[in-house]
Amino acid sequence: MIPRDCTPFGLALAAVAAVVVVVLPAPVPAVKAPVSATVTDVWPGARIAANTVTGPPYTPLAYLDSGTSAGITRASDSLRLTLGERVLRKVPLSGSPRFVLATSPDSLVWLELSDITGTGALWRAGPRGENPVLVTADTGRVALLDSQYDLVLHEGQASWAAVRGDTTEVRTVALSGGPVTSTPLPGDFSLTAWPFATSAAVEQAGPSELVDLRDGRVSRVGGQNVELVDCTPSWCRVQVLRQSGTARFDLMKPDGSERRRVGGKGIRPAFGDVVVLDRYAVVVDDDRGVLVLYDTATGRLADLAAEFGTVLARGPYVWWSVGGNEALTWRVLDLRTLEASV
Image (cartoon, rainbow, N blue to C red; front, side, top):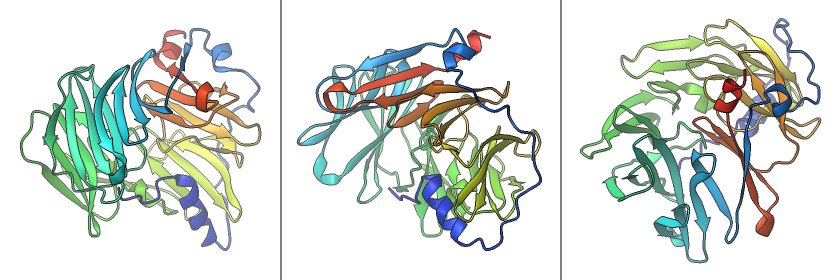
């Protein structure tokens, strides 16, 4: 994989080092100060399921429902992609393997890559992992951000970003097989909600760009020279910088409207994606040591977990680890249960 250093936090520090004089943007409306309300206090219908894992360490890569996940298990000789008790693929550890998984109602699709070369193959199976087949071994040098958009399924096709010199290639193949097509974008880009790519992979202070891959149209998203701006077509995350880190965490629309303050210097993203389901931002409150959910529709903040390790999100699901080794548990929230409870 081409790391591009996917975590916004490490890249943010590099950008901060170049800032000599910090002039913060004009104040924006603030969210009400968070209290200790939990997600189930705010949304009584919210359902958080606990999945206890036994045996070798397991990391879910996607949830098919709140009780069923596909993920990876590391054995002594291999990395295994599993769905329940079934092993879908087993790859020797010698190649530093990595799996990237995406789901649709009728397919389970994954990239099977080497962390050494960044290349590999794309596989497809039925919605419950039935009959895995190789789609293509023409992946290019894949760039990953640990995002749900690292592999995007759309209209019977799969797309991902690869790097060739100073160019990003958006590579696309039909899930039924065939040749891989490539759309070149000069510079560093990553995929976001289809059919858009974003320049957020660069993680440089200042404006960002969204590119419509259907027609090549570029939308420039404004940002000051003390702001890291990371966008999807629906929402942008703005981290306002200061010399010792970040001063503020905002969200806004790509056209600059509806900007609001989510939190101060103690708030940071829990993972790379800006929002989940085009609505919810998952953040960490370092001052209190809790995982927090922010709802863009209502402006509400609610505590999601007081204990957490790895935090991931794909589709409507957010999940996080608790404990470790023999006591490892993954807790998963289906965000659709929040919407159903209002």
